[in-house]
Length: 199
Image (cartoon, rainbow, N blue to C red; front, side, top):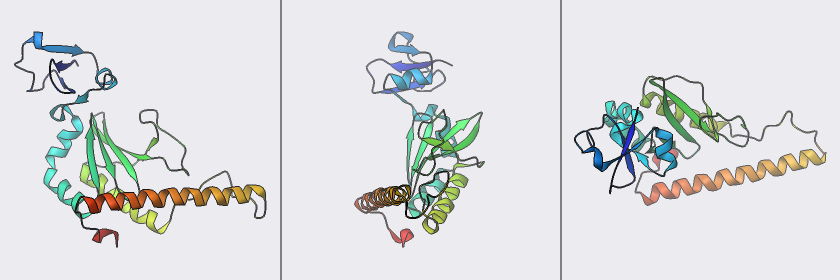
């Protein structure tokens, strides 16, 4: 599939079937060969051309209501949806016309997916974006009760240097996580969102 950039336009590119370019003259269009080429040139895929946005449109009202109640943030970037909560960051992508959920690596999880640097495939399957958002909420509830700890091959023996270093690293990790959570809450307050769901 070819993609096109409208000359003298903002930093948006479109696929060949997009209604924004369908009736434009070829002389007003610059052709690019792939989604990756457009992204690498600093352009963003038009929302109407984005497969993930098409999934979103099907259940827009339910999703918007859900993220407002649960104090989540969503953002579209090219062909993916970014989801942020107080505890975690996620990406939802389309692969073979199916939704796939990726979770941002924490210090305790170093495995990474080749497609998305710093994220790993969560290996759950949902049929809708709302199902994945509910999964994320359930995941965060679990994280509240079971905070992430640094993981090594095994916990070092108490009293050793490695144990002291492991404890120090865990404290630093928790401190960073706490700062990130406070910044997320402050951002929610600045947007006028209710913080009731965090209590």
